[in-house]
Amino acid sequence: MANQPTETLRDGSLKATIWKNEGEKGAFFSVNLTRTYKDDAGSYHDSDSFSGTELLRIAHLATRAYDLVLELRQQERANDSRKAS
Image 1 (cartoon, rainbow, N blue to C red):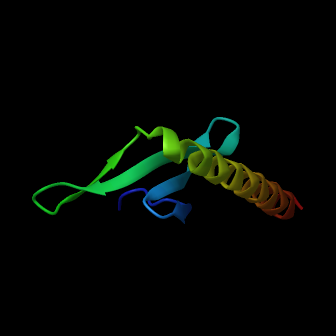
Image 2 (image 1 turned 120 degrees about the horizontal axis):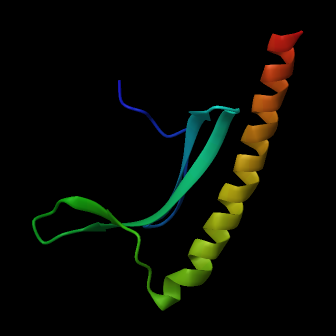
């Protein structure tokens, strides 16, 4: 089964996709910031390029993603503590 995102935050066509990964020191999270668009054929695609008018929105979305990643890391630590007990 393919790796699924842990969370996806949206602001219109902008999105922050949060991924959980496993490393040598345990779980860590990464974030992709993208803009969804539809091409002339009607197919949807993601781009990592943003217009000047989207920059403040993407900054706000990045802040929201940062806050959520902090919460997810705290949950991971709490789960790890329970497993170790």
